[in-house]
Each structure stands twice: as C-alpha cells, then as structure tokens.
Image 1 (cartoon, rainbow, N blue to C red):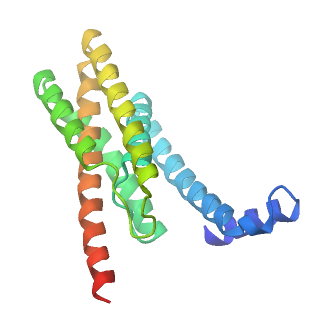
Image 2: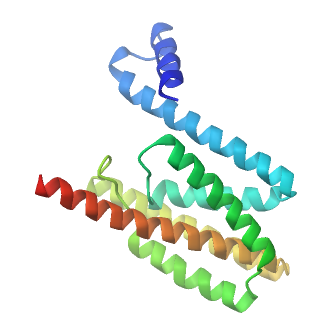
Length: 196
C-alpha cells in the first residue's frame, strides 16, 4: 500500500495538481484510502456471498461515521487492521442474523451505549493527538451522528424492522468496544512515551 500510495502521490505532484510540500500529507491520504478501499471491497464481497447487502450498508455507514469522529482503536499495521476489520464486520452481520436482540433490549443497548460513546469520544492516538478545536469539532459531529442513528432506529422500530434495530445495536456495541480499547491503548502508549 505504501508503494502504491507513493506512486499516486508522485504522479499528482509531477502533474502539478499539488505542490511537493504536501507530499507527506497526500501520500498518507492515498495510503489510508487504498487500505480502506481493500477492506470495503472484501467486506462487500462477503456481504454479497451472505446475501446481506442491506446489513452491510447499514453497518458500514454507522461504523465509518462514528469511527471518523469518535475515534477508536488503530492497529499498528495494514494486515492486522485489514483482518480485524473484515472479521469484525462479518461477525457483526452473522451474529445479528443469528441472534436478533429483542426490541426492548436493543433500545436499552442503543441508549446506554450511545451515551458511553458520547462520554468517551473522541479517542486520540499517539500518532494524532487532537487540538482542543479538533476535539470540539469531533464531539459536535459525534452528537449529530448519534442523533441520526437514534432517529434511524426510531423509524425502523415504527416500521417493525426490528432486525435492523438489532443490527444497529450490535454495531454501536462494536464501536464502543473499539473506543474503549483505543482509549486504553492510548493511555498505555502515552505512559510508555512519558517513561522514555
């Protein structure tokens, strides 16, 4: 991925689209984009095989939106991140299909876990610590996303789409676990840096 992102970045700089001063920024952006695209295509293929396209779309939208602004655990290399992401997404789709949370339990999960997400968000990494204005921006967008998720769940409930409410509940659980692990990882890495 690094090799490909270097090639793309070299091309856009050589073509004059961006200045050479922005090489590192664009190289990082291309690398992240390529890695996310690989994961997306793999998960889409699995969803097609499982006949779970709608579930894939709902999970992906909620997961990506929350992770973008709330943060979460970031693994240290592409392959561990790729494998973890594919396994988690596939597991959530399968678990939600096998075990649909009863609607009252799903709503309790949605309320409690979204409150926890709002409490912990945004989670930083040692590679990208947020400025105070970035934290406010992320928190504000996380609130909007949580409101949208709850609104979607209300409409699904009113439409008797209880399996979708259950999927949303399973998805926010996974996001919260990622946030919690990310927060713990950040504290551990930060204390190691402080000791050195």
